[in-house]
Structures are given as structure tokens and as C-alpha cells.
Image (cartoon, rainbow, N blue to C red):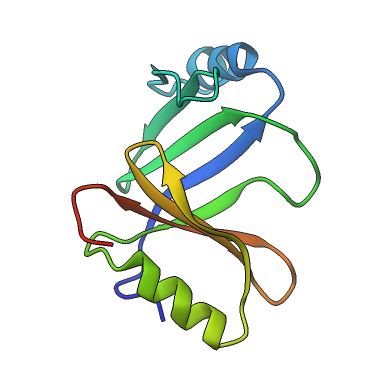
Length: 126
């Protein structure tokens, strides 16, 4: 079970970060911020929306079913325990707990194969 589930981010893979930035900034009107390189050589985008949710965009392979990904924020930490509990409940863990910009993340699939994610900052215990 995810403690206090709250959507913190909606994550998108995009084929062109520059084009995506122009669209969400100039057409949609969001305050899009270009973030520093994530270590992979690619810049990424963050666009806060009302409700304390961020749209985040990484350049990557865009395929049906891999984007967008709802990201549950683990404000109180414990990502390792949550992922272990999901696995024990029979959930398919797609990506084990791994480093993400500013924290840790893990991806898993719902019963229909939709990707979901957990994210926890480095400021709370794993």
C-alpha cells in the first residue's frame, strides 16, 4: 500500500524537448522551467500546474503505453518498503528502486500494464 497517496508528477517521454518547451510555454501558457542535465546528457523540463502537481518532460523513446506516467510522491519516505510490499502483492515491478534527479524512483505496472511510478526525494529516509 502506498502511504498517503498523492500525485506529485505526471511524467512524459518526448521526442524533442525544445519543441515541447515551446508548446507548453507558448501555446498552453505554462511556466516551463528548463532543468539542469540529469546526468544522461539531456536537459529536462518542469512545468508546475495547480494542485501542487508538476508536469515533467524527458527526451526519450516515445511509444504507446510508456507515457504519460503518474508519479506518486512519497513525502514520508520508505520507497524500498513500498516497492517490496507491491512485489509481495504480485505487482509487476518494471524498474527497481534507482537514482532519479534529486531522489529515488521505481516504476511498476497496474493490472492492465499501465505504468505508474513512485518518487522520493533524497531528504527523507529510504
